[in-house]
Length: 480
Image (cartoon, rainbow, N blue to C red; front, side, top):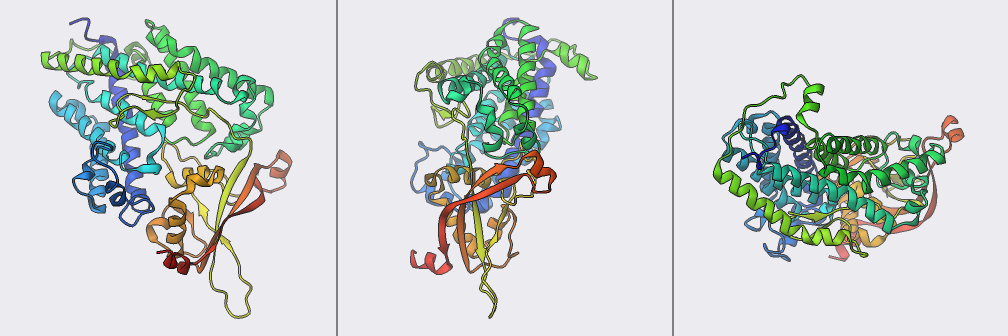
């Protein structure tokens, strides 16, 4: 079945599968470490409350059958175990039906989490992982030749990811058209990385070159993915290099890494044989008839479901990061259609009851990723996703993003909830509860070269106003 197989992509498929399993591993680790405070029975947006409002049809998830924090932890740890098994290569050596079962379980478990994750899981990279993970179910194992139709399906995902992001920029903020967006983006992006300060201070002509190169990578290069080798491989390589540039300039969870993983699936075995000490030659792979039929059926399903995402690409009212079905099978993507010119941050502060004769003193909670202390240099977290830090960035832009979880976050600080404090870098009170908590809104700016050399740290800030008035435990008790 020459029309069905893609014999030049054995190694590419293997690299793609192992890399995708690594992304799954990170996603499930994030779930294990953060769910109790965010989504648990005593979380800020409890899953049991959500399940009472939605049906299985609206949000397919095994948690409709039963929910407990222990079950959620079991789901996430099962995902971690299966991811590790797949990274280690065991899944690839199983009989084809069992290989498919492992990938299907990974997809179903993560789908169950995303569909009850509410605002904490409302990011495009969740759908991207699920869509790619669904295709991975049918890619075969070590004894079957890579199916050409689904390798093209992976390129179709990468095309929509890149081309959609390029179109949303051209249709959105004018600074993408006049090439000035990077005058602001490195400073105002959701979670700067350790090199973001340096990127921000690059010469402005270089910022314009960066934007122009981005337009070329997202609006022109994606069409080359569907051309013969070596053109498609070169185009994928350009995308991978561009995404690595984005990785070192900021923290965007696993968005950039998913694009890299998809790009790796396009590179031919001749490239991998040159790069890695692996023999690129392979015997003819098995092609069970039932698997051929199934792959063709899945390919047809993807083609049919692609109608709405494709129509969205050419629409003047292009939606960004939207799912058109509750299984997240075929989605639309995009990022940063608008760029903030000013960075606002919420500083959360607490105060204990002062001793007699002492002045009351407000002390600030420190977050892991989002800017708080002016001298604390940003760290690299991606592909790990700090969900609370990201939502704090959105809340600073508009209070509507803070409802209803932010007051619940404050209430848990007031009782020094252990799981909530684990989401933070440091509580100024250790494991003791404060008497009062408030939130202030600041404008943050990067310091200049001169200020940095003078020891002022990487940030400066100016108070804008009050985000949340001082509240006590009694305030929450009175409100029920």
